[in-house]
Length: 124
Image 1 (cartoon, rainbow, N blue to C red):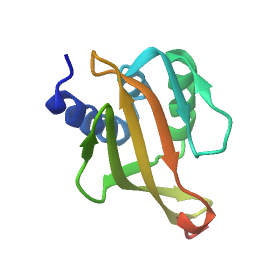
Image 2 (image 1 turned 180 degrees about the vertical axis):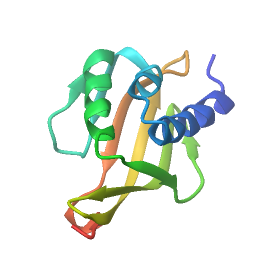
Image 3 (image 1 turned 90 degrees about the horizontal axis):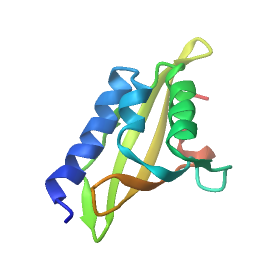
Image 4 (image 1 turned 120 degrees about the vertical axis):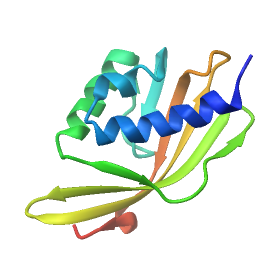
């Protein structure tokens, strides 16, 4: 049975894992057969190991996440706005993002979709 508190905690753990540059902690939030599409329209990453590798590469930028509003829960989904802050090519950058997490009955993420594009990238 799903637990809304566990789903909120998963989003908070996702943000905290970025703060710690811990790709293993992010991967642990995902089901074995999960899919990540970041950003929407880009190639997807299938399975926990591919997802871990994707996040490990992303974390090399030193990216940190800041929640920019409340986490919304609806059905099997959590939706949350946040900003990505990184220092890249000698300057501070920000990307405004909305992610969706779809959860299974064990409150593991089965699908993550990231909504952002060129107009959401600041300082690039």
